[in-house]
Image (cartoon, rainbow, N blue to C red):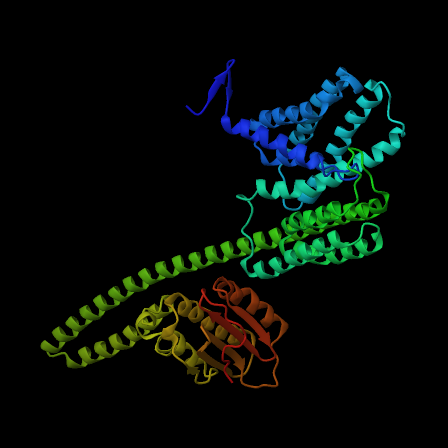
Length: 517
């Protein structure tokens, strides 16, 4: 069995290891802590963020062990009441603050504000209990005033929490967060390496050279800002420890629990402000990135649904056109039989008249059926289907559409794309014939640009001095853009022409594709 039962309470061995690790971490970090940067406070909040609430009891056990190690030897000096209360109230207060913050879902936009609120609230709550108990229960209260002590201790707790809490939250949300940008891996590693190098320089600077250390800290802020720009609040969560911890390790310490260095205190205050600014900047970048990503996904979904709707309509029209084709073939067969019977009865004049009328109406019927769906497009491609269909016959009858200039091989494009351009081209020509005067030219070219494949169609007025009216431009956008945009294309209205661009959905066709003259 994984669990052992002691006194009716289930005990997890992993939980005991967690408690021991927490106690050791707090005891070890306390040896390197100052009042102005108290690492155990940051470890306390970081542990509560990383460990799930069901295991918080073991973190509390580790806290009790840590304080037992520290304060049992001080009972005679400070009193049993203080040793017990000051050891048992701090972690429950921190748990309460973290629990109240965790109850509210964290969005990318609110991460920085959430962490700032958590850091300030925990620092104030824990410090107020700690200082109040020392003033009330110590036989000899500390000589400094409560306000002076609170300034140092609250700032020290806040500085440690704001350093470790973002990193802990980043680890806790590692599975739910979006993936890291692979393209930014090398710049990120360069920024981290630069910050580590500057952190090492801080350790080599003489203790009294506060001005030089401040300049190095400011230099380290530049790659920290770069990380925030590249990765949002997650970049800030990595950058803040790389800024604050080297400065803390380079701060002179007396080795006493209440060690304080006034020369570095101003720099650490600036670093705290910079940490808050980095979190705010990173959260804002993450928020806008998330909004842009959501908008992009919504647009992709909308375009996919639009394409699916067009494809469904085309399938229905295809079935209808096939049915009309069968009806036409049946009527042709019946009329041929009638013509043969009339000829066999000697009515040759009536038979020839009926045969002529049958051929004319059969041709018209096929042209109208091709307008419903160009079935020949699937076998011979867009260009031949366009020239042999009913649309081209209608254009010819207007005597306003010049001979189309069609170049390239449209068969290299998929059928859906050819159908979309077929429908859009017919609509564009009809639009110019309806709203403009003069001759209309049609030019199309299929081409490749690298790995990109697509087609560009230009429908223009023959007279280059003419300019499309505002009404025509508005109607073109309203009537043509829907189908074109659904396939990732574009519609451009310039001077006397409409320019339609379509490309394969899996490619990114830019304006570099070959354009008709």
